[in-house]
Length: 166
Image 1 (cartoon, one colour):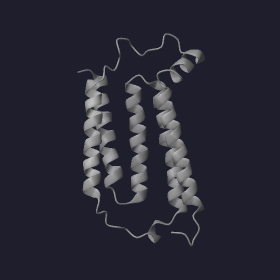
Image 2: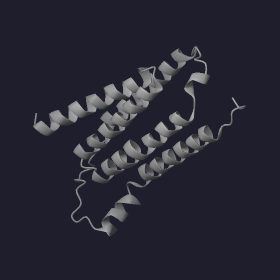
Image 3: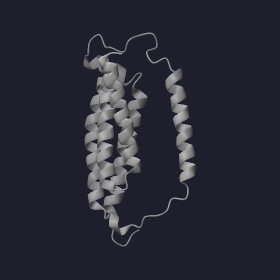
């Protein structure tokens, strides 16, 4: 096993542990900081997979912009006003998470990732990046834009909530 493979597995394990910390930690600010760490580590994992553009987008947009937006939304709201509720449906959520993990694990094992060719560009011109961005990477790019839109709308709704609203 090479050093790059060991580093990849260490980064992936650290990203999984920090993602688990996002869900487990009771303090919202610590959870947001762990989210920043998780998104940044995911960007580094993309870097090891030779997806330089996705790594840059992951670190700059998600690790930076969305996380700062989330921290501002946390600062604008007052979490001490809201009561902590007992979540009676956590077994259903756990079952759904196990099913989603099983489907994703099956897809990760069953997919031919390279498809018979290497993903390295011969030349990194704007035209080549555009062909990749609007070709095989169009769906991940649109998913990223939808996540950003939802995060922005959520922050606006939280920031515009008045004192009398619940």
